[in-house]
Length: 112
Length: 112
Image 1 (cartoon, one colour):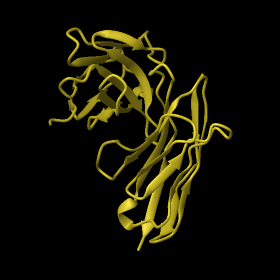
Image 2: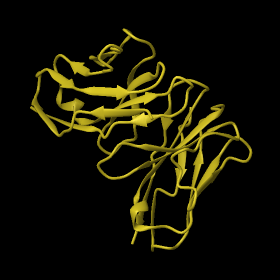
Image 3: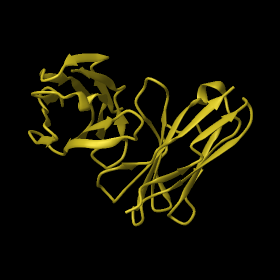
Image 4: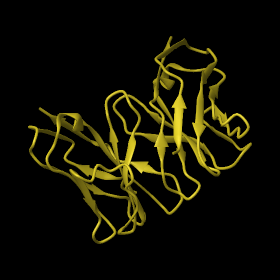
């Protein structure tokens, strides 16, 4: 079945450091890929998405590119801020719009 | 617009008791999802409804879990009887047919 493997955390960075959180997937067909974020005390919210190969999703300075050849969707940000501290989840949705799968989550802490 | 509503926010029960959770999705959202998020893990999809029909319940433990969405709007998820390993946050989400999922605040269940 479909699955998502996400870089284990926690990750601790200093402000303005470069961030990469790795995500790889296994899926049949052509899934849609997502990054969700959960800020402390808040619910899950969509950060960015990509629905086909080579698409790049971006939002709030974060970006991720749908790489079919490496089955990856790594999250990157050039310069993190303290306010980016949160748990980040990689997810996929099956090509027939069901079978939503999430990774285990990566906790990011950014220190001033 | 109002977000996804869930109740109760917290519930503590003893093992072998039953419990029910309620979800009211965003108005007009045809698709409704129930997830189980165990501490330290990503959300696991339990069931997906399209209007009042089930699209995916492959990960729902049907011997003890049940869910319904009789009028295609709000939904209830029931556990009967509960086990210790059911302790988790139960998340409800809704979306337009293939759009972004919007998550509710969740119900934190503790089984003692």
